[in-house]
Length: 222
Image (cartoon, rainbow, N blue to C red; front, side):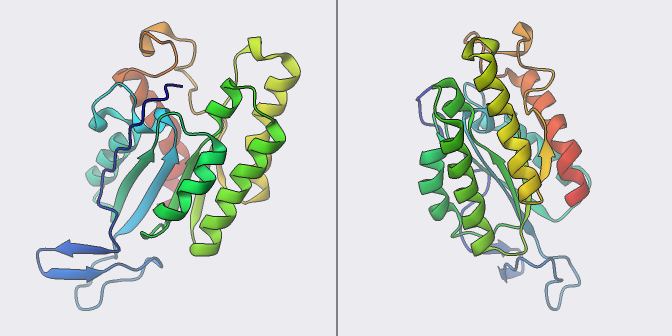
């Protein structure tokens, strides 16, 4: 993955949300805002790498933004926060998550590990780092719903490594009762026409497929 840093925040990272009627206190339990009869706006945090950030594309072409459009079309009370960062490793994510948890999080989508795999880092280390991220999110927001985005490595990384790497995501998802996307890049990985010239990052059309892959697991949680 590119080491170029791109952090695209689709919504502000404050603890309060402003509406036409003034300031609204944001809750995280799905209750109705007092005096309005409207559901509280809930927040979906996408935490990941350049795949989530939409590297090389307009921020509105990244799959979290596409999912926001789906949510809006259904008139659902959710706001998406794109916290994808190019070059992010699981170790770096373990440190960065603390800052992001200062804002409300009701649904947490975890897409980390791809850069670890491309660097051939220890599967055990990656797994431990991802578990640490999960633990921090749960500690801050015990009622959070979580989604794990699985990733796979190309065969040139070696049969044993690629098998162990693939398995770590399903194991973590099962252990932590997370909705599970077996392979985020399903239908896109290895398809030249759906990837940019680097062969790694999806095009705008590829991101639409990623959005569908995520939506299939995310929609039942809304």
